[in-house]
Length: 96
Image: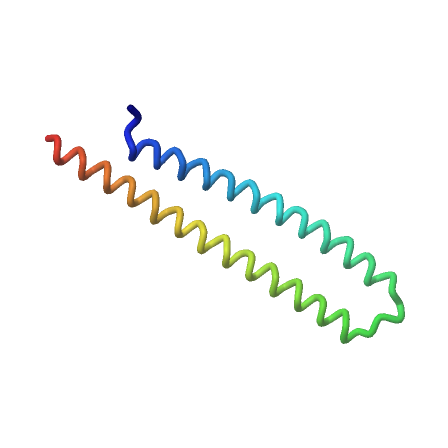
């Protein structure tokens, strides 16, 4: 039978890798959309400057919130990894 802590650690590693890959793909897509949007706005001569400024601020806010979300997720994964490390240490000290 597989050790529960080892299985939990493997699942955590899988989830972290899945999250990192999904986040990277999402950010690449967002960057591409930003470039397309900037090109589109540049071609719209009658688009008010106020509207362009608002859209740029919205984009900056979105990016900032994505970065904060990533940081929170990374911190959470680190806490879970520390939990598994401590559990392993506790088990080793019990068996000694």
